[in-house]
Length: 394
Image (cartoon, rainbow, N blue to C red; front, side, top):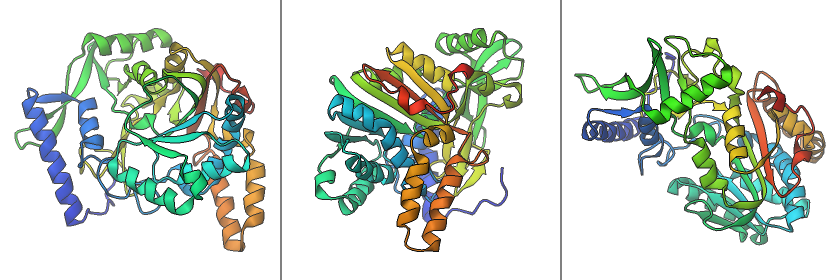
């Protein structure tokens, strides 16, 4: 664990203590141990207490991490460029953003889609956090012209009827509560969370059930090798069901996912024998997932091969897979940069635009660790992945 972590303020620590007490009560009520995925769900989404459910700032320089939309408008403009032809093919349709963050993406995407004459008839945000939903509403209400703001709606759940349009998710999959597995003596176990005699959270391994075992054996068959003894990682057997839940009723349109992760062979490489789980607190890496629950963001990388399997299994065509840098450059990043650079009022503003490009595209920043994957049903979405297609790596 990093030793330079800033200590939480008293109110934040009290908040974390309250969530920790709730999780301990759940552990005791459920027989003394809960799957790690259940712990992660509570740590991130417990109503009013979880990391994404409470009111502390998450995004941007003053939060715990910076997402691509928080850097400036370039990311959203390139996404808008990629989906504008789809919305034109549909004559409008709905744009559904999963997890709206601070509202920065919606703001910049709507403005750019209006400029491209490709506005959706409705811009829907599926946001489980009531606090974030209110912040998004305030930001968009203040920043957008009324004609654009009136198109924005907030959903309590995925669409429950057939729809047409675009589904977009940036850094959503990495925050899905994920089971952890381990191999001991050739047998599969699932990682659980229990309490030690001092009622501190500890990891314990229990024999895996049939659902998790089937998912891990599927990965082993794909890799054409069993996992070595002592190997520990994550697998998301519920991903196909999640894709069906959020996108199954999308009868005509496209889905675009951007996140950090790897194709399966890299995800389960021997050097990652403890998996990809990690936490972030005020822009610092946290190795202990039990440190300050509710204040620390927990996340795991995405197995993009699993995402491809889930999307095609739901009846979509896999239209492309590439790095974030390849996706952005293939969707007019250079032209969007030139426009913003030309509109900049001074040297500081021009420098900031240049920094956006570097952070979004350089290999040591977001350019290669973040990747984009697209799916389509009944529309052409291949144009968005003409640069650096990596489907062969899946």
